[in-house]
Amino acid sequence: MFRLPIAASIFAFLFAANAAPEVPAATLVAMGPTEIATFGAGCYWCVERDFDAVKGVVETTPGFMGGTVENPTLDEIHSGTTGDTEVVTVKYDPTVVSYKDLLDYYWMHVDPFDADGQFCDRGPEYRPAIFVYNDDQKKLAEESKQNTVAQLMKPVVVEIAKASAFTPAPDPDFYKTNPIRYKYYRAGCGRDARIKQIWRGKPG
Image 1 (cartoon, rainbow, N blue to C red):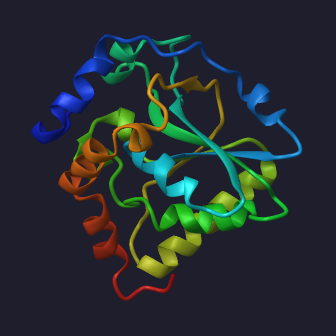
Image 2 (cartoon, rainbow, N blue to C red):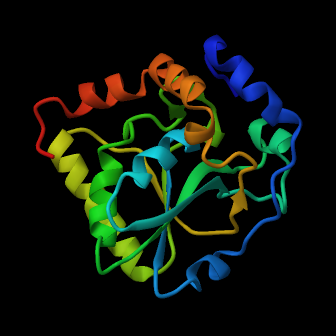
């Protein structure tokens, strides 16, 4: 796992902490009348901030998904050995924003060509992924991936996988509670510059 030196002081405290207990995927779904989506696009603080800006999104929760170790610690996750990746669960009102709309938004906020991390964050725990909760979500996610390939005219490496147990992060809303550090990290990581480069001249 690697992060830029400028961000080292921000993240050092994380590595000794334990994440909260896992939440089964079925429990996440049973939240009605809202629905749930889960996206991985590197640093979960950045993904959380991006989706909080979407009208119809009720709540975002950063954490980890896709691993094989039950109730992993942050040390284990960031060692890259558990199979987890940083994600954000997005609780949304489907009468205001659809799952398809969220997928369209996701593709505009991820580097779809980088399977080994995202932006300055390297390692499997930062790989991009869409975790789906049912067949409808899977179908829509696969269609949106193919549409993105067609728009960008390059292979897309974002994983589409079945949702599994979710481990909440210990530091939600970091972009709100530490806005200066967050802005410093995001700018230094080159996230927005890279996304602009990918989509320059493309629709959306």
